[in-house]
Amino acid sequence: MGSAKALRDAAIDIAKLRPLPASFYDRDPRVVGPALLGKIIVRRRGRYWMAGRIVENEAYLGSGDPAAHAAAGRTARNFVLFGPPGRAYVYFIYGNHYCLNISCLPEGQAGCILVRALQPLAGLERMARNRGVDLRELHSPARLRLLASGPGRLCEAFEITRAEDNGRDLTSPASGLWIGDDRHHPRNIGASPRIGITKAGDLPLRYFLRDNPFVSGPKAPRGTR
DNA sequence: TTATAGATTGCCT
DNA sequence: GGCAATCTATAAT
Image (cartoon, rainbow, N blue to C red; front, side, top):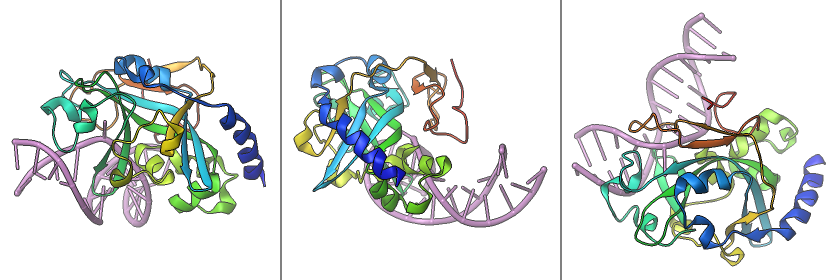
């Protein structure tokens, strides 16, 4: 199968991956967002594992960003945002979906990156099972986009939940959910307003890889700049 | 191919 | 009680 070959190819790359240190995230989200494009999220579940390249994300600032969950201050829901950098902030939305964020800035300062879309690299069969996608249709580009193109979709594909993953340290492979640097530095980064928010909708804080087919949205990336 | 509504839970006011 | 950093099915073009 082609997907089996893709898994083997990706396995070689994953072995070389080095986890991004906490210092990587200890910066302004507007810096971390573009820097995270091209980086690889790895999920290990026992002897199974999955990996995907970050192709789209959004920056949320602390105070001064009315669209951020941290805008109203620290609560039981968002306390991870005020903790150390490089931790998973997972929240539940619209009664159906989880979304994965990564805390930025030093402890005491809120700010994060919302991961919006991944390009599946390894473990495609398990992602397909998690997402209810027919394994026999994974050769179709349109079907592949259903795996992890969208913040809710990628959490379902990677088995990310608030109960299990909120607060998880993403800088250590031992945690089973971490982000690696393959030293691939993409060019051609686009920016646009953030998706699905009602406040501060004009700020261009959404970052994506231009021309990458796994960026979320009906077809082409909405907005450019 | 695009537009619209419905689902469904938990957080915050 | 209202609403949300979404996704899917269904309808209409």
